[in-house]
Every structure is written in C-alpha cells, then in structure tokens.
Image (cartoon, rainbow, N blue to C red; front, side, top):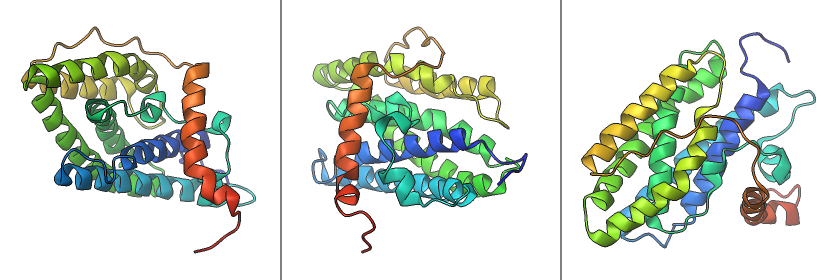
Length: 244
C-alpha cells in the first residue's frame, strides 16, 4: 500500500521494536522491584511500551502486501531484522541502570510522540497522542528517581553515575534518528532541556553531549539482542500458530 503521508515502514519498525524491547526489559523487574510501588510502576510502564509496540506493528502488518500479523513481526523476525535502538535493549545491570535508561528514553520519546501526533499519517498520529501521555508519565517517574539517586547517599550516587557512564554513549544513535514530519534539531533541544533540568536537580554533572550518529550494533550488542529475543520469542516459536 502506497501513500505519501505514510511513515516509512523502517521508521515504524524502529519505533515498534524499540518500544517492545524497552517494555520487555522493564518487565524483567516484575516481582523483583525494590518496593511494591516500584514493582507496579515498572510493570505498568512495561505494559504501556508493549501496547505502543502492538499498535505500531498492527499498522505495519496491515500495510504489507500480503498482510502480516503483529505476532509475526514481534516473534518471528531474527535479531538482524530488528531495528530497535541499542539503548532500549541494554541489560538491566541494576535498578539505577533501569531508571537512567527509562529516563533517557522517555525524554527522547516525549518530543517525538508530540511531533508525530500532528503527522499526516493519521494511524500513527492516533497512536502518538496516547503514547505522548504515557511517555510523560515515564519521564516524570524515572526523573524523580534519578534525583533521588543523584542527591541521595554516596552509594546511590555511585550507582546512578555508573549507569550514566555506561548508557550515555548509546544516546548518540537515538539522537540521530530522522523521522519525516519531525524536526530532529527541535527534538534534540527538547531532550537536552529535560536531561539538563533533571540532572541539575539531581546534582549530577551533564557529560559532554554524546556524538550523534547512526551506527551498527557491535557483536556484543547483537548478542545481547539475540539473548533477549530468544527469551521473549521462545514460547511463540515452540508453538507456532497457537491461539490462547
């Protein structure tokens, strides 16, 4: 199906794959959160991200000729076919890593969804309107925890600074994303503003802004992706065509 207003399939898959694997990583905390309230908050965030992924996969599937299904896109593509951002796939080394990753991603998603909410691709715009609200909730929740970690104890600060050192270089790929109908420079400025204000409150030093540029995942990063997909896709691949 061809329409000049439609967002390119590669862009839709990048967004969907990023939401899916980000949501899956958050779901790994279900039953393991540091407090009941946080366990629930991360589970809800995971469901939001997976719901966004489902909606985007449905758009892609409906536009393919022949039509595909959301399950085929999520469960039966291999690691090299996924277009997810490396930041979203990063392993949850500890709770500080999860929180920092959640904040950096949400701060990027808020201006992106806001821009797509006015897109000429009406199906995508409909998803973006609700996704923008959910991204704001995630940014606020994660940002509050970044402040607690940064302006807390010596141990909490050590952990959040370690998370920042590990995750910051991965932001360059995220910030390089070009999407039709959105202004990358405006989105980068909005991301910088969110990061700067939160880090100031957290008494964290903002590192030099990451070098912006698309890159291919390293062999180690691809192996991380293969591992998370092997876990996520295992049931569907063991029982292809099953219904529940």
